[in-house]
Length: 426
Ligand code: AMP
Ligand code: GLY
Image 1 (tube, helix red, strand yellow):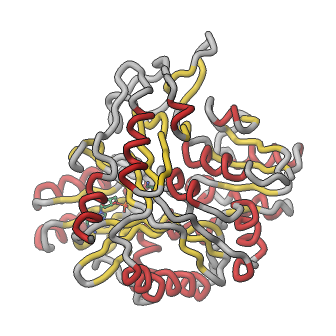
Image 2: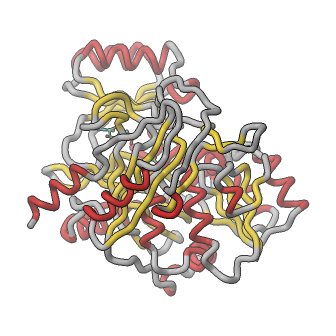
């Protein structure tokens, strides 16, 4: 089979490595891929957001199955266009992708169908939003409506911060057009859990749970990032929480999307907070998480391609999705300055890391001497599995310590909180 994967980060690298385990896969093309993915797939420099380019490529180079991994092409209707050509795809169509692409859509859906989430108000008028934050309960969370590279969320502990956040999003265009509408919502407290789930619009098969570490600094300080590391499974996702999530969140969300006439097929990512009143939805993503995928897929025992094709064919009910026991840890290595300004083109020394861990490339390239160099904010994900979390973390950091480049940063405490929770549980 010929497979096409749209995207070019660590998540796509993890997906491609997993797809390659199926002996029926003859070749994988990745648009645009990166320097690391090039070792596992043919990379063609067509941007993931260039939907016409992708469609033209597929017209000239027929494929048997396509995986559209990032949010932007999904929201832009990449799957709709490929389906028009008769190409089988994994990923939601544009109408279903609104569950991530519009926070207002997602919040209204949850309200209408009684799915637990933070209380909120939506605004497209800046004056009204500014008025609202004069008297709303504090802390409060201000969210740009549209896609904003994970940066459209501001947690405000004072009224001044809330005012600034509304102004930045709605009047100063800090998130482009994504911020012309905002959601202002109740601040929730509790541990966060990410659950990715396969769904074909009929059944939902949650994957092993995970925990992201979104802040740039150790101890969860500093600005939000795309994610600085992950562990799986997440110890806060107890069997009781899982059962409530299935009943109160996962199944109702699938049913709500069907009732709205936009069935969701693909990987639905539930960003959850386990509050004292039970699990609540913080956000939905219409795709695999990054770097959640890097810890979840190595634990998948079932064949990924078989599961993805069952999602497309709506036969997931007959397809087992099984995970191994044990645990996984992914430490992200990033460019100095990330998530703010950073330099690219730093030569990467991998040491012996590739023999010690799965190295997923997020933002890498080659310089004109053919050397592996940094080409993004998040650069490499170093991932290890083991029978228990502590061992997985130790292995991942030992491998990460092999890797060097000028200005490299990484958090030293990935999984530390999870280990603390595990100790308290036993
Ligand atoms: P989001 O992009 O919606 O996932 O938000 C980014 C991060 O902001 C989340 O992972 C949470 O840590 C935090 N966050 C978002 N919404 C809330 C909320 N209502 N209460 C507390 N923290 C939140
Ligand atoms: N790691 C968070 C995300 O993929 O949105």
